[in-house]
Length: 263
Image 1 (tube, rainbow, N blue to C red):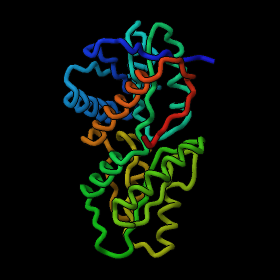
Image 2: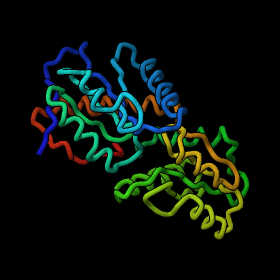
Image 3: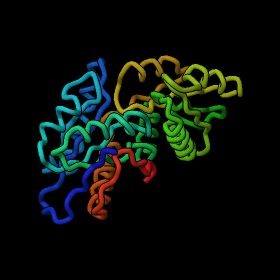
Image 4: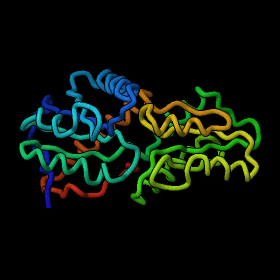
């Protein structure tokens, strides 16, 4: 079994590990722009931190190239992904294992977390959300995954968002690989008597899935999370948690260790 080496406990405080944000990648030209804006916010919040980017597919730099460029340095990889799935559990650890000189740890994915709910709420408000009229409901539109833990994470976020909205029904739905689909969720809510149904975009950046989900909104559709300040804070939170865990444990851990996604 491949293993990730822990960062040395006696490293100088000034030599912080690089933060490597891991994005999925997209053919939509708006996606890299949104990710770049998010990472600019991260750099503003943590001046001097070496913040880099690697993509799982479609965009440069690809993650293996980004890791090769670090050489024998220390790094914490922060997936810009919203739940547990194949990319988080397999693709990212495999890229780390293929960079033997790198001393690295993989952070948990961004979701679920209250900071994501803060961003989702703000995006809905910007789109015109108000729950003053009875019959309001929200479809939380996510990418989707065949991994059941990914759906568990989406349901957790939907529950948190519903609480944040004061008890409004929030139903997770998916653009691919899982059910219900966004249009199916909209139809189900309408059949239950909900007249104002909003679509909350549970995507880190614009892209094909986000656009398709928004097109099915019968009322309003929120923008993707993008460079929301809460998302930038969450990236650093995941980085800090992973770095602290690496400093606290001196033994090696398997690359396929499950993450505490709600931490």
